[in-house]
Image (cartoon, rainbow, N blue to C red; front, side, top):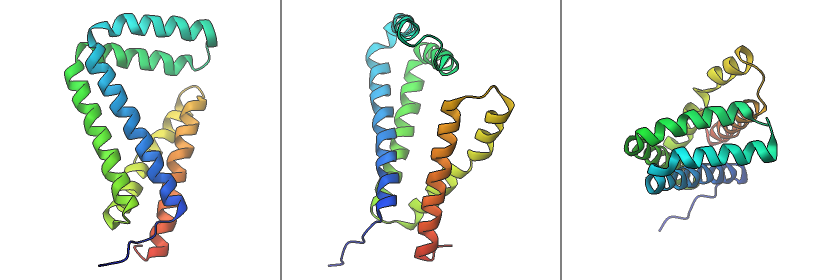
Length: 156
């Protein structure tokens, strides 16, 4: 019997981040599946509550989420399938990182790294957005953490 490989704390943090994203996606897909007929009413109620409590804070993200939610309600089966696929990828990546699989490190670095140029572009080309900045910084952090771990393991 082989001894289990110890995974560093930083890789465990990336794994936890992946699991959180996967669980969030599953909850979203289940909600869309269960309430797809009520999405327009739910969107309106959520928007009204948001504006009442937070005003224009994150208004760009709220508008974008509203558009996506409206499209999702019209094509709910396709969106639900897409969201479950996304969640599956997050869970597979989390499993691979947790079990110290080489493919998972490459998947993580490439999967996050490919979006960084686009995130920088949108941060510069469009009005400043704190949410986009946080997403960019989290993605850069994941790439750096996983890349450093790959170097220590001799994978790069």
